[in-house]
Image (cartoon, rainbow, N blue to C red; front, side, top):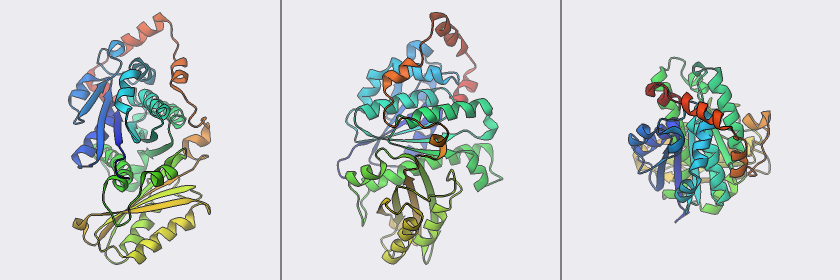
Length: 357
């Protein structure tokens, strides 16, 4: 996939945090962009490209946990957003759903990317239960809208992190959520940007991700003899999977990361486990990323696609790839009085607003 241009766009507070984490982790070969209504959050972003949206609407103060404001902010600046999307072959849109900017603006940005013919993948989190029912309901609505604006969507329910570690602290839980978003983007992008024994080209990745709807992600690590097989078992049984299963997947993208001594037999056995679980006609592709520093450890990332009836889509199916930007705009007709009230509502304390967006 030499020469393919990948952009990662972090939208809102959660997306911005995830992008910062990816930059800190040293993910290479991709362009990082932060998009926010909150000018202070943008100033603190590590992304080389920062885009403030909705400045006349929010005055740089954030969306106040209101997705409608987040959406209007993005619609206000569609030309600037198109400018940053131009030239990309693949775009990851990452956000924490439930707040204002990420929930409202991410579908607009994704729809713009789709209209430009860019392979568009959303990687998002759903809120922790402790964040409240309203935030969860907003996240579900945002998820439905996003499903109609992307080729593939990977959703990480933050509540699953507690199942992985019941004693996890709130701060560690949010860090783990950022790490999961990081690993989703890394697992796909490294197959594109890193040299491996088995390389993929853009056509391979596009075939598995284009128009495939809901995707599930599993991550596993193991050391020693049979590490690839043990890591694969951990990945496909991952508690991070929305339904703990990749059964019936129409496609799968597999990343094996390890030293140059990874045994071929182990890799073949591990891939056979995916074939056994997936649909009999599934398109399964894999690649390897060589990192000799891992010694006898192997990391497996599995992105299983094509779950049209699962997760968010099972509740209220969206018209795939048909959600245009003018559709997004049409659902937000408001009177001047309503818009004035909306602007007044966003003047809340900064520390509360930044956490919510």
